[in-house]
Structures are given as C-alpha cells and as structure tokens.
Image (cartoon, rainbow, N blue to C red):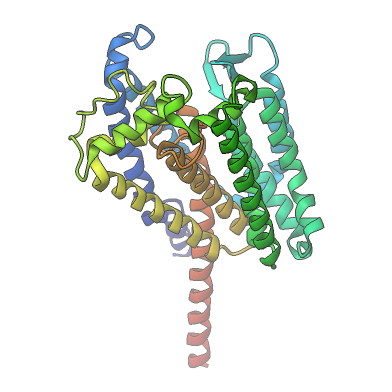
Length: 411
C-alpha cells in the first residue's frame, strides 16, 4: 500500500503543472504560428531561399515549437536547484560562444552583424539565445549568494560586473546592442528585486532621463541646423531617423514608417487575417521584428490588445511564481525569466510603434526564430519546476499538519 501511494505521488508530481502558465504559453505559441504564416506566406512563395513554398517558415517554426514544448515539459520535472551547478560553466560557455563568432567558417555574418554560429551538418543558431539562459542561471546563483549582503550600491554593482563583461563582448563582437542591453537589463532587474532600498534607483532613473532628454535636445538642434549627417555612425543615424523619420523615409526610417502605415490602416478590427498590404514587399521580412505591425493591420486594435493582454497575464503568472518560490534562487530564476520576456515585449512594441529607435528586438513567440523559441521554452520549464516544487512543499506541509492533528486528536 505504501509503495502504491509513493508511486501515485511520483506520477502526480511528474504530470502536475501550472496549467494557467502552460495555457498562456500555448495560446501565444499557436497565435504566433498563425501570424508567422500570415506574415510570411507571400515572401516565402516568392523566394528561392524558401523553395517558393508558402508554408516553409510556418513548418520550420512549428518544428522548433514542438521541440521547445517537449523541452519545456522535460525541464519542468528537473529540480531547478540542479542548474546551480552549471552557473559558472554557463558564464564560461557564454564567453566561449561569443568568441567563436570570430572564428572564420563558424561565425555567420548577415547585414554587417555576426550573430550566428554555423555547425556543419546541423545548421546555424543565434548565440544570444543560449547566452541569455546561461546568464539568468549565473545571475540567479551569484545574486542569491550575495542576497544577505546586497544592501549597498558597491555590492550591487559588483554582482553586475560579470554580466556587464558579457554584454560588452556581445556589443563589440556581434555588434548587437539590443541583446547586450537585454542581457544586462535582466541581471539588473534580478538584483533590483533583491536590493532593499529604492531611492538610489529613483535618483539613477532621474539622471538617466535627464541625460536622454539632453541627448535628444542636442540631436534635434543639430537636425534643425543641418549639422547632422553621415558622420553620426549607424546607431546615430537610427536615432536621427527616429527623431525625423520623413527626412530618412527612403533609408533608415523606411521600415518604421511602413510599420506605422500598417498599424494605422488596421483600425479597430483590422483588414482580416491574411489581408495585409504592407507585408507584400513593403516591410522587409515582416515575419521578424515588425510582425506586430502586421498583427495590427490584419486584426486591428482588438487583436493587438488581445495579444498584449495575454503577455500581461503571462508576466503576471511568472511574477506570481517568483513571489511564491520557496527560496531565493527559485525566486531569482522566475524573476530572470520574467525580466527577459518583459524587456523583449516592451522594447519590441516600442520599436514597432516608433516610441524607440529601431533595434533588432524580436517579439517572443511571434517573431520567426527557432533557437529563440526553444531556449525561451527551456526558461519557462525552469519556472514551471519552481512553481511545482513550492506547491508540492506547501501541500506536504499541509498534509503533515493534518496528520499531526489527527494523531493529537487520537491521543
């Protein structure tokens, strides 16, 4: 009888998941697949690279989504404390992966940026995605170890130094400022959640806002005087295009303006699924960073709002798991995944709506990308295990308390 009870408990543990979190993830995956097909079928059918197959990108993303879901369910049954042993290895592996981009034949350069590694006989993957996972694990371990002493800015800055080094390497080697910002931002938010004082960040935020405002004012004056030109560099040119898009409408601001036209033409309920005009060659690669503009054009404010609400619910569930975690490491893991999703969603939506200069930030579960999908679902799997362990521990404590009460009453 005891063995049967133990077996039932093991099976209950293996197949018990936070269904609210899983439903939110599956909804976003399925919705994302629908929109990837809608945004890509025209481009795929016209391209030799996609074999003129309108379903090419859909089937590719579906394959990676299935693999990612399987990975998520497996990782959900792995004790999240197990990953602490790989924290330092993750940091070293991240640095090695970034350095491998410099190796001829391994690093793949697209549009002037080297962000992919090609593995002969297998394919290529974007280095940034495993690095994000590794740095979440490393930061959760490091910040967790310092959590009792994380009460001054010196210690706060100290725990961010390793991530800052990795971020600088990403920026310098892969020329990927968006990923460098997100990686550092994830660790910053994880440390912020543990830090007991808030006033230094109010001052820091005020100083940052003042600096950004001064920079925008300076650039606007240069634009007004005609001094701004080709010497600004490509990031400076992106900022100038953001400030004055119609002066760069055939170049740097072209994609942003086309995205705004798509959003504006969608209205309340959109033109209907599959009926986007902007995806017909006007927005380059509409299934990537700018897919939200296609969603707005085809499904209108209603469809876009539904997706934003689902992302908010997903973030709410991730934050709830962090609040209920049984230890600091589990809390930080969940906060790391929360920060990753939140930063990418917010930055992507700000770029698409021209509230932020153009940068290569994808929309989780919607933008095309197999590597990103698999590693993000790996992260969700870790959060599912954090939730599962905290829930089962509470149930065990409640069960033991009831047994104690029965024993006391019988006595």
